Amino acid sequence: MKKMPKAPKRKQGLSRLFELAGGKRKKLVFACFLAVLSSAARIVPFFTIYGVVQELLAHYTLATEVDGGRIVLLAGVTFGAALIYGICAYFSSAISHTAAYDIIYELRIQLMGKLARISSGYFTGTTQGAIKKIISDDAEQLEAFIAHHICDIAAAIATPVFTLLYLFGMDWRLTLVTLLPICISLCLLSACLKQPDKAALQVELHDSQERMQGTIVEYIHGMSVVKVFNRSLSAFRRYENDLNAFADIVSRTAHANAKPIGAYYAFFGAQLMFLLPAALVLLPTAKSYLDFLPVILLFFLVGGGLKEPMENMMQMVIMSNRIVEGVNRIDNILMQPELGENGTGNPQTYDITFENVSFSYGQDLQAVSEVSFSVPQGSVVGLVGPSGGGKSTLAQLLLRFYEPQAGSIKIGGVDIREIPPNRLMNLVSCVFQDSVLFHDTVERNIRMGNTQASREEVEQAAKNAGIHDVIQALPNGYQTVVGDSNAYLSGGEKQRIAIARIFLKDSPIVILDEATAYADADNESKIQAAFAALSKNKTVLMIAHRLKTVENSTCILVLEKGRLVGSGTHSELLRDCELYKNLVDANERRDRWSIRQGGVSV
Image (tube, rainbow, N blue to C red; front, side, top):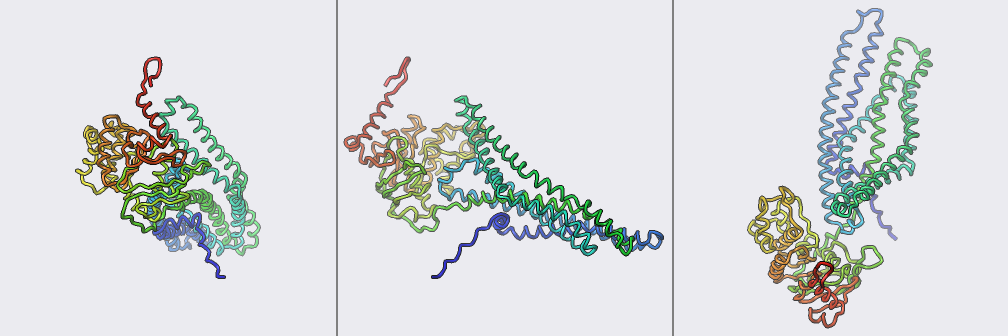
């Protein structure tokens, strides 16, 4: 039996980071090459100084015999090396920074695009703070790492390699002595980094930081509720607890690494402690003190100087471990399954069919359970029922915010999973209970429905939604930026701008999820009249708690605890559905409800 080929193993860590760099990898490689050249040029003066000292000691008894030409040549080489170092270091930094900015820009665009293509269920189990940390903080760390540290790693590796190669040519015995403390320190660091508990601490560190970020975002967004219920202290205490937890994991990480890192640093800077006794042992065996003395001086000078580039390299290794976890978190988003993009379905009609659809948010109680119904093209169907009955869930399933776990949803006989998401979004428009306006002009907020629309069409859509006069009264009319210059809109006004988007989009299927919830009585009647015009030749699914808004619907569907318990016209349901009759009675009592001194009148 022929074996199936193994799926290629996904890259991780720095190799994955270079993969994410895409077309900018060549720039990074070239920047690293320049960094290596600069590091090579940086160590040249040590060897030119050795040449000068050697020349001076060779003729210390007769200064007139010193080769002045050689001294001048060595000085020129030193100047040229310094010039090469400066030029290469500058262009290496410039190229790496440019590449880093481009990579992070493209990565953030990729992340934002990905978030728009994955199921909304991902956001249910992930806090805003965690997503903000990944897109902002983790990406920012990657930018700093790419712009600075990748080239630093290349230079930090190249400098000791070039130096040690030269030193081996000078005296292999002293070179091995120079390497001894470095090897010991590297073994200590490697043993520390490879311990599973150290990797677990890094994961815990990121988790704790995400929780802290999430609490901050939640605290700011809920500030009005916190103040109204006088819970400032307890809400702040949550942040304080998360902050203390983060400080605790940082402290535990530091203590866990204290001994091995301390030993690492103790050996790392001990070259002179090893070189001095070695030099004293080897000095009597030297053929000439005058030849051996410059060599010892060079090893003292350069051997001790190895500490800085090697320390830089080790710091980069430690930092790369943090970057690896950040890359993993970014990949956690990029590897999320997307809604199918390969569908070729293209409905020619716009009737809607739910066939035995079931869906759960992960709880024992299903939000929707074996729901089946049809919405003929051009009809207006109302969805009613107690809160938590599954009405909004059905709308979100139709929009493919979630995938049904059983059954199918069809538009024009085509399963929506076979319809490309962009095509599906062109077919369906929706106004939810809570409308979102972006920090942009009112016109651009409305234009989200159709970016190619003319100004006249934008204004007509606003008039149809009953918001045109309100917009005209804003400081800069349609060019007013929402939230700026005291341009604040009420909840009902925001809702009507969202409804204007629907008019402008003019899609054949419209979902209205409590679209008139925030409108006052006057504007509600205007919006209802606009809906009547909007619904012509369109398939409309209207979710409502105010039953009067759906009384004249072609059909009304009654949902309770995720199940369809009744369907029919208003009069048919009053006769045949006890739950619908109770809902109507409750609505009538609510309309008669009023407050009077000393009690409530119903």
